Structures are given as structure tokens and as C-alpha cells.
Length: 246
Length: 317
Image (cartoon, rainbow over all chains, first blue to last red; front, side, top):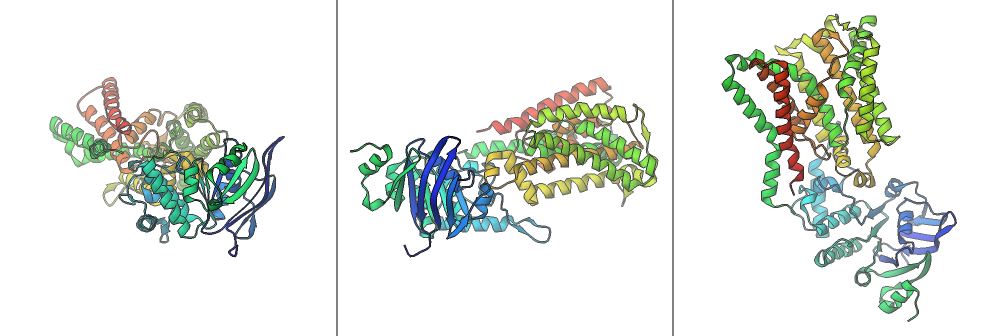
């Protein structure tokens, strides 16, 4: 690959006491690339997500963002380094307007009194949802008035707005219906078109084949392999996940 | 998704306090002697309401965060006594006022410490400090009152007037305006609402949740202390009984005003109107010639009805 990787994981190892959660994990995600992380329950996907998002520290191994070695003290530290996470359960505040959610914790202010710049936050929100084609009535709409798909769209838009290194998605469509899932997948593809590096955890293999460029498989803490999505058949992927020969 | 009709219903309930205010006002204006409508009496209502209004501003922040501060009533007495004692020994009005406020902020910080660091529910922490502070207030002067004789102090925190308007009205306006500004125009206010709405989501999004919780309890303590200073300025003396029945009035004013007891929703102007409503009811009942026991009964019924109407709004789905 000629471009520098947005995310590089080298020999990531995680030990909880005597239990090995991740044996050894290597991965590169390039800008404008979507890599899917798949595996059965308990394979270590969540642990890996928590390591990349700063909630856990790896026992051994190296994380690089755009070539730069990093280590995160906590989730806000990871965020400060440009890693944004879209959580399964959204992490949005539903009684607040869309624009306040987009800027939550990073509100824009103006003037010497540093008062909230609501007009600018609403304007930037409008620009972003237009670009990502997330259809909402207005940036001023209260979040609880939106559908599940629209809300997940907002969560992804928020990650898009702030991510400089990587967008990490943990089961982004787990709670959504078919039509809403399709819409969110479109948003994810637009994110890729903007040049974002995306690592997506998904149980849904159809989805992996629809959106991902490559897929990497974890089984009981061991990385079984990484394949280009157009070079792997679904049956082979299932075999890698379950460990059962065809 | 809520329907338009649901939203209209919720909206309507958000403004219950204004409707209640207008109805009660009209009722007293029509049924009482002409004295009710005099400028003196109407000003008197705002002046009577001032300490409750000041505390209500602090309580809006606490409830909006999804917490509760039951210790405000006893903070009033401790801060008022502390301030009056400093005034008595130093004769410096500004030092006395600062001491009072400092005591309030300190009490808020202690509440905040047990809530954020020891991680106890605010209901239990402030229930405990409420009782503790009642004891402290009684102990401070052995139940004796402390006179406040400094002219500047009494003018500034009690009987003064500026441009022909009572200083209590000015305090009310300034405190409500500052409260509104912090709630609506500053990042802190946005974070308060976010934490009250969903503390986990706020934390994951980078809001310093415990710092916000600590902040609202310090604000609440400071507001209660200022109320205590205003009482001692107006009554020209501090006593351990100051503020002892205020906590219920403040909570009623704030909840009736449209702030959600469960957090995430706040109404600063609503709290002001709620507080004026409570004071107006008191005033009208006195003018109607009800005795203290009857006033308490009527006030209890009114609070129950008003709170039922306001709280039902949250359940609308």
C-alpha cells in the first residue's frame, strides 16, 4: 500500500490475570478503507474495540495512528488523538437538539464571554447531515423525535465530524430495521468516500460483504486471518469464524 | 415518534406555571380587597419571594443534573449565622458576606465530594447533611440570635432600594439573569442538561460528569447561603430557624416551574414564576384572613395539585 495507514496495530496482546483475551493481533486500516472485524461471541472483539478506543491498555504491542506511536490513558485521550467511536447504544442525549448532540462536550463558543454559538453549531450540523445525506427535519429537532436510523445517522455524523484518525463502529446497525440499516450503510459508505478510515465490528456477514473492503477474523482471542472481501467466499469466512472445516 | 398532538400536550403542560400564576393572580385580584393590587403589596410579594427565588435558581441546576439537594434549608441558617458572627466581630460587611457565601460553597463541595468521590446518591448525602447542619446551626450560637447592625450590610442585603426599587427585587433579577445565562448560554449549562438527560452518554461524549455534579452542588450551596444573607439583612439578625421550612417551597417552585425532577430539562424563568406563585399564594391567604394552620393546609393542597400537573408531563409518550 502506498498511502500511510490511518491505524496500525502491531502485536496487540491483552492479558486479564491468567486469561489471555487477545493472543496477538496485527492490522492496518488505510484512509478511505472499511475493515470489518468479525468473530463469535467471546472471541475478543469487544476487548479489541476497548483497546483501540482507550478504555483498556494493551498488555503488549503497539498502536500507531498515521505512523505515530500512541498510547491512550482513557477514552477522552483516544478522542483527543482523533479516534471516534460509534457505540451500539448511541451515546446521545435524547432530550437535546441534534446540533447539541453533534457538539456535545465540544460546544462552539463565541465572543469574549465565550457564550454558546448555537447558530454556528446548527449551521455546521446542517452542512454535515446534508453532505452525509442523513435526512432529519432540522438540526434543531429534539433527538427523541427522530427514528432509530436517523439517530444512528447522527451518531455516525458526529464521529465523522470529529474523527481525524479513525472511526470505530461497534455493531452500528444492531438495533435497526432493514430499511434503516440500508440507510446507515449508505452513510458509512459516504464516510469512506470522504477518506475516513473505518473499523467496523459486525455480527451481520451480509453487511460485511456489502460495506467492507477487507475482513479480519478473531476466534478465541486469536487472529485467524485477514482477507480481501472480493477474495473470500462466505462459507470460508464462516469456517474461519467457527473453526469448523467445510 | 411523538405525534403533533402529543407535543402540543407536552408544551401545554410546560406552561402550566404561567397559567397557574395568571389564574391565582386573577382570583386574588377579584376576591380580595383592593389592597392586593397595590404596588406596595405586589412589591412585597417579590420581596417575600426573593430568598426562595435565589435558592430556586440553584435548585434548577441540581434537579436538571438529575440530583437533589435537601440541605439547602439548613445551609441558609448556618451561612446566615456564620455571616452575622463575622460581621459582629470584624464589622466588615463585605467580609461577612463573603464568609456567608464561602460557607455555602464549602457545604456544596462537601455534598459534592460524597456524591462524586464516595459515590453515594445525592438524596442520602444531602438528607444526612441537612440533619447535620441543623445541629451545627443550633450549636453555633447556643440557639441565640445574632444581631445585624451594619448599615451597609442591611441596605445591600435587606432594606435598601435603588432607583426606587427594593434591593430584594434587584437581587432577584440579577440572580435569575445570571442563572439563565449560565444555563442557556454557557457550556456548563449544556453539560448540566446532558448529564441529567443521560450521564453515561454525556461522559462517553467527553463531558466531565463529576465536575458538573460537583459544580451544581457548589452553586446550590452558594445560592442557599445568599438566601441566608438576604434573610439576615432583611430581618437585621440571624437565627438558627432561618430557612427551616424553605426546602419544600423551593422544590415546589422549581418543579411547578417546569424543571424535571428526573433531570435533563430545566426552566429558569419558570422557577422564578413558580417562586412568585408560591409567595402570592401565601400573601393572598394571609389577606384572606386564614390562620397559619389553614394556610399550611391550603398551600399543601395547591402544591400537590400543581406538582401533579407538572410532573405528568414527563410521562407523555
